[in-house]
Length: 257
Image 1 (spheres, rainbow, N blue to C red):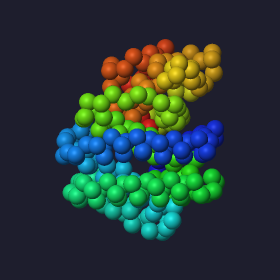
Image 2 (tube, one colour):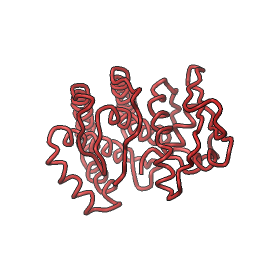
Image 3 (cartoon, one colour):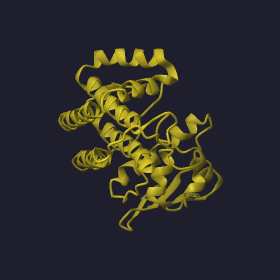
Image 4 (cartoon, rainbow, N blue to C red):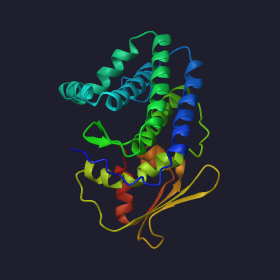
């Protein structure tokens, strides 16, 4: 079982939730002006429609987990039966629906989810894939996924996104996901502390970890977020690493399995 027991105690839902909504609204504005959703994206076999279907289905799954946890057991069983293909199969089924219907489905789901996450007590746990989550973690996770799949669509359309302070939520997930990265790579997690120093869109420096750490990762917040979400390879970024463990982390960095 995957442990999502990440330390995001500093997440402020009053800030993170509006950022999640804003991320969805920005992507909505882009795809609403895009008539052809059949264009292939960087994800193999996925069109723009697949990307939006995936986001819509994920939002609906979170709502099911929050509202009717017992019904979420069926979602887990269906995913287990489909194996590694379950995301592809779900996205393909959603992408087969008419564009207007899929767009409305995504809009309705993300609006309902934002309300549910706003009203949910922060300490109330609900089931998720391989773990139990709370709104504290789910809000930045949904923001991260919206941003990452939005990046696939932007790359498809040749649009350059202006980075915003919303990246901080994704960067924080990347930082606390260091243990997950080594776990997924079947490597022992280095015991020594790491230092992460990222430059935000406004020039502010975002830092995590002790200043005297021997293992240091640095660069732009945008590059770090692109790397940990696997939207760019390490050599496509300008990220820097001091220390062999820091370098290895950047090579295997992820925020999801």
